[in-house]
Length: 109
Figure 1 (tube, rainbow, N blue to C red):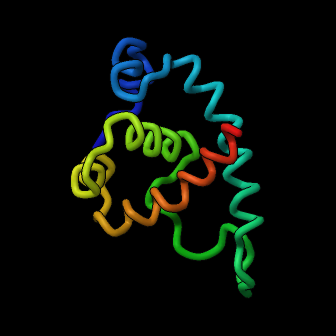
Figure 2: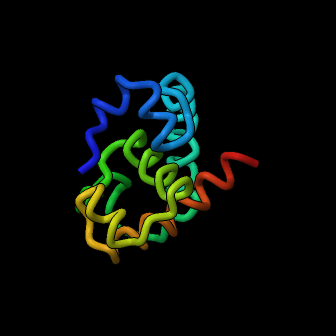
Figure 3: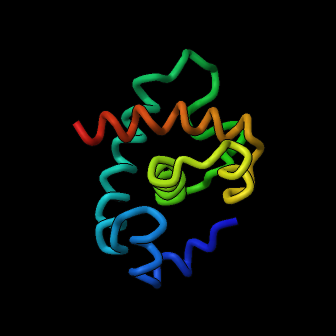
């Protein structure tokens, strides 16, 4: 599993892993979080449960989601390796990539 705390303390390591400084990552994370919530509300299917109910995601915070997709885009690891780094199964990695890429693409535009 990636040690997020260590990554956020070491600016050089952060740039090497995801291509952004710690400050840039934190600034981007706040905006990415808002875009992710908008994306979830817009693409939500009709369910009886309220948003946030049910099984919790395996990538818990918006910052973790941003780290996940930025690492994927910079290094382009296999789903197996990305799963090992984030403690997920490769099928779950594939699902998260398909969810988070459009969020990041919409955010960049």
